[in-house]
Amino acid sequence: MKFKIKKAEIVGIILALILVLLDYLFFREDVFFYFVIGIAFVIAAGPFLVYVVIEVNIEKEKEEKFLEFSRDLVEGVRSGVPISKSVLNLQDKDYGALSIHVKKMANQISLGIPVRESLDTFAKDIGNKTIIRAVNLIKEAERTGGNIETILESVAASVTTIEKLKKERDAAIYSLVVQGYIIYFIFIIIILVMQFKILPMTMGITNLGGVGEIGISTTQMSAQDLSTPFLYLLITQGLFAGLIIGKLASGNIKSGIKHSIILVIIAVMISTGAKIFL
Image 1: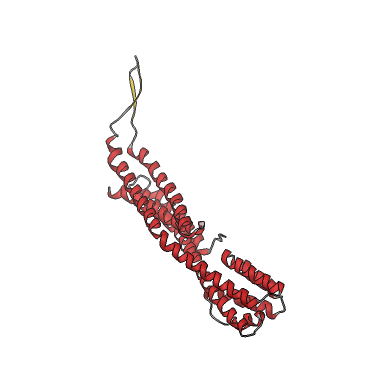
Image 2: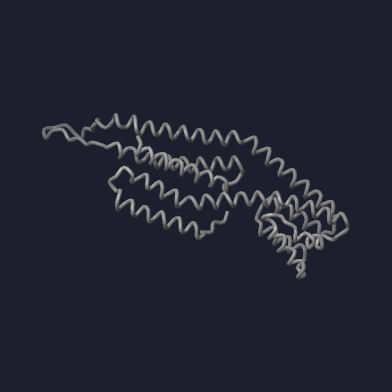
């Protein structure tokens, strides 16, 4: 997955840094300090979350539209039209996120670039594993002079099967994704109980520094000193739990990043907000 920092993400980071600076200047000793830090994190991470969600949806749309494109190619070749001419005939059809790549391939073919090279560029630009495998089959059929109609039908059938299996897998693991979120929320509740119920009970406990003729030295630890690491624990847990959920849901880390950002934002806002209300 290629990350390109966009203007919205840069603006989000700058606004978050400004908010952190103002928070430090005006709320450094206030109960709102960590809550404002949480809001700053949401502002910084929000654009990245939107970007990841959009990218994942575009990838899904490309796979779905490639199936439609493959079927249209089959119909064209079946009617006796060469594959190069079929691509030219389909360049103005709406394939959603795939349209720009189809038009580029058609332009290359119209300029005299061989179909194999155009298909290779088409696959590399999209970068989807399913589409790359399908295009490689079409290229080989075109190179060896095989029955391109049969190959295209096989490719379309293969892509259809893959899409069907993905939908079945998504339905099968949906409950696992929900369980992952439920388990994480239970973990947050346990941390909050420890932070606001158990830790205050320990504030009266002192650690003996030594007993002797000089006397007894004691060190008092505040609940704040003990509760701060819990926030780091929630963030770490949310980060890796999100990656695991994404891997289970879609089989790639890209979706995991989306879940990680969501879980971390939830953890930060609940943890910092609880310090105000509890």
